[in-house]
Image (cartoon, rainbow, N blue to C red; front, side):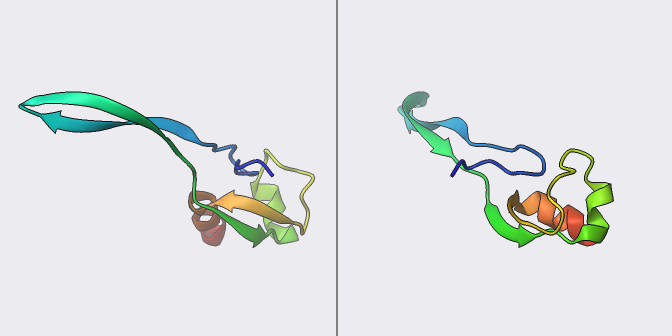
Length: 74
């Protein structure tokens, strides 16, 4: 199972951990950050608002928290 939002396509990203040592920043390690994905059931009435995913009528999909909030406003 990929860790990708099925509505907007948000996926993981790399970030760098910085440690301050004697007044200078030292990049020490790289960390992969994942989106906050939740299982949500898409109602059929809100499918028209989602132009990117027309084939997910009434299915359970992984969606990021931002998309879930956007669906609640529609």
